[in-house]
Amino acid sequence: MAHTGSFIDGEWITPDSSKTIRNINPADTTEVIAEFPAAGREETLRAIEAAKKAYSSWRSVPAPERGRFIARAVEIARKRIDEIAETITREEGKILAEARGETLKGINVLEYYAGAGFRLGGKTLPSEVPNTATYTIRQPLGVAGLITPWNFPWAIPCWKIAPALVAGNTVVFKPASSTPATATILIEILIEAGIPSGVLNMVVGSGSDVGKTIVEHPDVPLLSFTGSNDVGSALYESGSRKGAKVTCEMGGKNPLVALADADVEKAAKAVIAGAFGSTGQRCTATSRLIVHPSIKEKMLEIICEKARTMVIGNGLDPKTEMGPSVDENQFNTVLNYIEIGKKEGAKLLVGGEKAVDAGNGYFVQPTVFDGVTRDMRIFQEEIFGPVLSVVEAETLEEAIDLANDVKYGLTSSIFTSDINAAMKFVEEVHSGMTHVNEPTIGGEAQLPFGGVKATGVGDREMAEEGINFFTELKTVFINYAPTGERSMIR
Ligand code: NAP
Image (tube, rainbow, N blue to C red):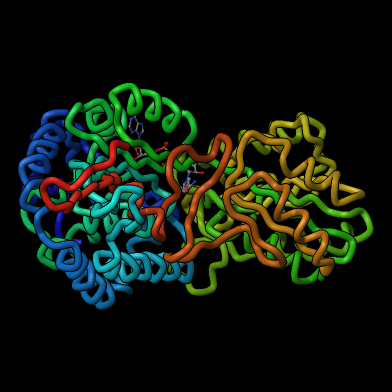
C-alpha cells in the first residue's frame, strides 16, 4: 500500500483535516499500520461531482471493453496476493490462511465480472404487433455509492465495485474506517488497470460524515450497502425516500441443524469452522447449533475439545488458528454478550473470557453455551464473535421452527443422511442461502449471495444478480411496418 489518503477524480489527495483514522492491528494494538487523514463532507461532494462528470464518457465505453479493465486488474491483483492477504490479517485480524482465501475469492469475483461485459444483454421477445421488434436492454444508472464493512475488506469491495463499473456506472466508494489499507490496495490495482479519472473514487472517512453525504446526495441514484442492521435500515429509509435503487446486506444469526442421523464428526467440524472461523466475524457464521439430543454429547465433546485447545493469537503466525476481534468496540460487544448469556441462565461449557495469553490484542476465547432457549438474547441477536449457542430439537419440524424463530435469514445448514429431511429443510428454512452437510459459511462468484427477512433488502449480490442491481431495464418497441400498412393499437 503506497497511499494513505482518498482517491478523487484521478488523484490521491490528503484531506486537510484534523481528524485521523488510525489503522491499528487488532492482534497487537501497539502496531499502527497507517494513519489516514479523515475525509469529510467536502471531499465526498468532490468525489460525487467527479463521478457525475465522468459518467457519460464511461457509459459510452462498450461493455466488453469496460470488462477488460477488470480483467487487467485480475492480473495485477494476482501478483499482489501475498501483500493483500497480509494486509487483511494485519488490519482485520483473521488468520493468514483465511485472508488468503478471501483474497482469492475477491479475485474470482473480479474474474467473473471481467467477462460480464460480454453478457450485458436483455431479452428479445415476440411482439403481438406485426412488423415490430420488441426487446429489453440493460443500462447503467449513474453514480453508485458503495459502503462496505470491515469483516471482508477485500472481497466485498470487489463484489460491489466490479459489477458497478462493468455495468457502466461510476463509483464513489466508502470503505469501513477499520480497514482502509486493504481498500487502498484494491483502488491502486484498479487504477493501474487503467480505469479513467473520475470513474472510480474512494473517500476514507467516517460513516456519519462521508457515508451520510453519499446516502443523502440527490446525484447518487444507486446505493449498495453491507453492514449492520441499525445503519442499513436507516440507510434504506433515506435512500428510498430520495428514489434511489438500494440494496442492503446486513446481519445474520445462522443455524446449523444436526439431526439424529447426521455424520457427527463432519457436523462438528462444520460447526467449528462456522462458529470460530474468522473469529465468528462472518455474516454467515454459525451462531446457533440446533441438535438432536441423541448426538448432542458426542458433537459437543468434539467442538468443546477444539475450543479449549485452539491456538489463539496473531494471524500472521502460521500456528495461529483464531485471531482477535477487529477492535475494542467489537471485543467489548462479544464479552458483553457472554455476560448476558451467563445472566440469562445458559450453561457455559467452554471459554467465556478474554484470551489473556494470546497477546496484546482483542482476543476472546472460543465460547460455547448449552441449554440456550429461544427467548434468550444470545439465541436471537447477532454477536459477531466466536460464541456458539446450543439448543436441542427432538424432531425436524421443531428444528426448522427454532431455525426460523429469529429476525434474520442469511444462511443455514442441515446435517442428515435422509434426503427427504434435507429437502424439507431446504424448502422451509427462512434463509437466502442454505447448505446440506456443509458449514453455513462460503459463497462463490457465480452464485447469488444474500439474505431474507431483516438480513437483506434489495437485489442479491454477486453473480448475474449483481449486474441486475447495477442496471436498469429498458423495454424497446421498434415498428418497421411499411407506410400505409394497418397498425395495431396495443
Ligand atoms: P456498520 O457499522 O454498519 O458499518 C458498515 C459501513 O457503514 C461502514 O463503512 C461504516 O462506516 C458505514 N456507516 C456507518 N454509519 C453510517 C451512516 N450513518 N451512513 C452511512 N454509512 C455509515 O457494520 P460493520 O460493523 O462494519 O460490519 C459488521 C456487520 O456487517 C455485521 O452485522 C455483519 O453481519 C454485516 N455483514 C453482512 C454481510 C451480508 O452479506 N449480509 C456481509 C458482511 C458483513 P465506518 O466504518 O466509518 O463507521
